[in-house]
Length: 402
Image (cartoon, rainbow, N blue to C red):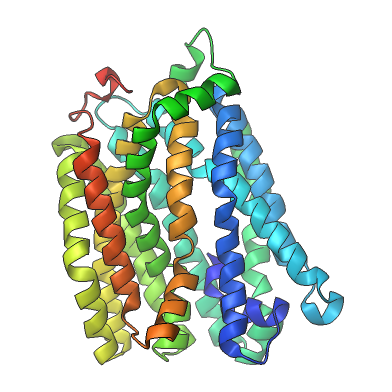
């Protein structure tokens, strides 16, 4: 989140250029390159989790992610060590991406398998809801820094502060994860597939993975549009102040945090498919008109209104989508299959900040984020319609693929 919020400052630190646009694009490309590693992390680390256990996987992935984050936070700028600086930052992002390829899937599967029947949507939704704490916390830090430090200080060294503060959580989370129990669904299986068997099973179930990719695409495009990209969009495209953009992002995080568990619980009562169809359809119909309305009168109030609407669509859709994906992937390869589908979609969705920045620059249309989101919603809608229904509320344990 911090990397996305301070991408302009990071671009100047590691990718100096005579063009502000070029420097920003290099930083956003570095942000996006981490997502290219996620499918590899899903394949290799996912097989590790499905073979050796959910708990061990959670410990391994978080350790790798911590190394990557510390690298980005501590590497000196280009002015100090030259070309080595951007190389090390890219390597840090690659390490982050490799571990993140199975981190989200590992946590979601763990919550799904630990949840009581009939409440899996509510339990799994807290994986996404917990991410919003990061959104809010990073936005609060950024907003406080904008009040306490001049812009020149933030651009020079202040952007490192939130990264270092974020690293303080590393020992705390490692202690928590060491105390976790293995899930009953994994522990009661007498045998666990080898990596080779897992890969063959994933190939055999490629339609499920493809359907999952299409459904997750709307989630990732929406999430990175309304969180990581909002500060850059508000500042560089709409020419609002840093404080206004970060305050909107803070409100987005709070909105997401509110709606995700509500919609996860609602999906337990009425099913996943109705919510998925409704909110992907609403995103398809309203995303571009909402952004077009915003750019005709770019104010703090308009940006807040549009982002609150997009937040509602994202959280309502995602509250049902994550648990739906966990339900349709076979148990023996659940972490690998879930993570592969999610990471492939995130490889595309994570490039959203760089992609829409380029589209705006190429077309001159500042509403292009809405067009890109509408395309993602259309692809998700097709995946839902072609992918079939998931289990009825409370019956996931009896679903043939669960």
